[in-house]
Image (cartoon, rainbow, N blue to C red; front, side):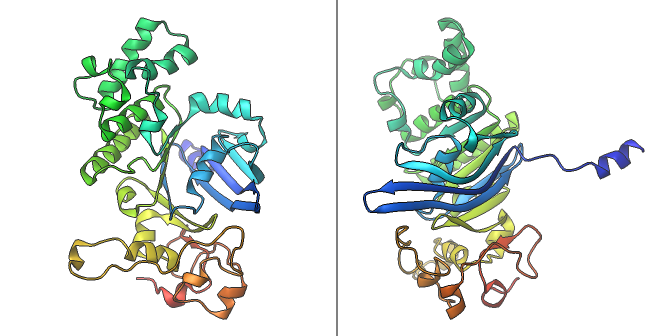
Length: 342
């Protein structure tokens, strides 16, 4: 067999991360809350997946489950698999997962100020991974920390490395968190609302920085956001979450241009547009459901303008709507009728 034939017939490479039918529960005084219910997605090496949805949809819980950061004893994985580089993180002891995540998976939290220690200089905190994980001496680790700060665009890094977190702006603190996250060259970076509370200009700078670092290192990325506009030019694929489930997924441009779920369409319609100056915004009516008392059928049906008796009684599974691009899936019974393609 020729080399070309061998390449054509070889199976596709396994994804770096494969989340399969993941369920997460929280025990509360009011009862057991199923925060994730059958969540599944793949992320290939070097790929960027955007996980999008309103607050409370399960985005951050997904990241916490992957990183073994679910609050204990309340939170637990109730089912499913989290395969990372061939290892099922859901089946491994928490200590083992955190040890693996310390070098191979990195997480950027929403609020950099609360994630940085206010009593230690920035240089000390950025250098810590090199000292603890690689056994570097203080001087060598400090030099690596300075190199990282310059790499993420901290101005006058030679001097600012001695400053404390409160002496930096919000955007600069986020750059510092990114520097700490990429210090050990992770294979996967999870950014949980990395542009929260930043102005539009700084948001664009942070997203460009992440894209540049990904191109430079080849790491995979998961971007978690409630803002569909922020990730539009960075991610290749999108997964839209609602009430602990993925309701639509596909190539991001296809999902944005041809939404196959009314919730996705509602999110897109609610984005302010320069072309609609003076027009009223189109918010999604109602509020996300109480996970302790989910509606019957499709969880979105109380807010859906296209709801029918069938959607009120049947829980829709992800499927490929007729006429949509291959790989574009939606958990909606009426995709073809209420959101005609094109």
